[in-house]
Length: 350
Image (cartoon, rainbow, N blue to C red; front, side, top):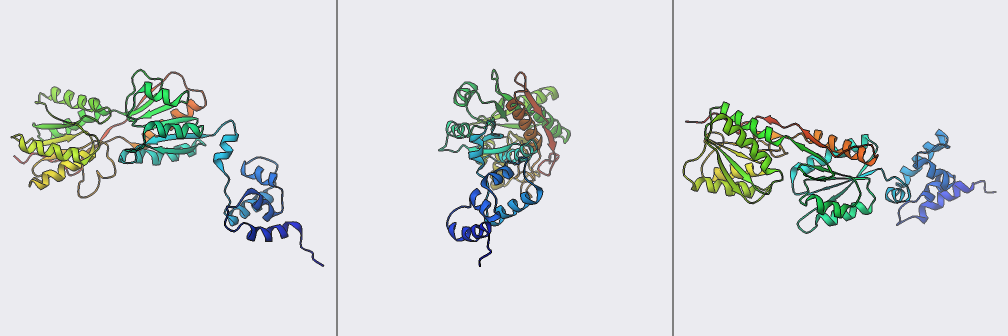
């Protein structure tokens, strides 16, 4: 006489039946000997399931390698509880912000869906992907397109822009106090005794004029002569290398050079070293962002830190408020910009 129950037989048979395919909710139900509907209640975190049964279902799911299809659940529900993030993975600062967006979104009960832009993948494609997943709000980190183009592509979905201004838009904006950061950097260099301070103005850096304005304001306030090198390009070491070549061919070298991003400062430092100039013995160099390369021992760059955690928290809070319909007029949220002093700056040698 076979006393084996139906649940046990189903549990035994389900292992061989599901070889080569992903585990399903039915597999979990069969393993535990309960209904598929009961398993669904557990994974939707709804009431009506006893603690012991819930634990058995979760244990069986782990053993079978089952995880719920959250995308399908979101499409079926009225609220996806998801925030979409679009960024360029070739830039370091957005990566630092993104890692913290995950943390703050999870705390708020939201999941994060990411879509990237590349040289061959446009912002439109990235936007279409996230809108298709019915994200309740989008966070755009340093988007290239303007407001009209972005709003046309995104439709009514709420938007938070991080890292650049968006005048005349209905987007919330989160960005650092770039002008104050550069103003403070000029004053730091002047306190070391520098009077000849050059500024490398990479034109394609978003909000580049804001940072340049801080340099000009401080230099004028101190009565120092302004010297600006303008370059096409953005967050690239190559832009800094071109700046070094222009400096070397332009006669008198300044005592200090300020770059409007850390990667340009890195390229500048390396190229000047190839010319035989050492930092900071021969020339002081500064950047902006305080991204992950700035603190590396070979560079040890004095820079302006725009705190990625502060920016991520502000962006998520704005996105969640918009998704909930509780936000008012569009806001521009300014985060701090503090100096991080390292060994790439020192008093002038002469």
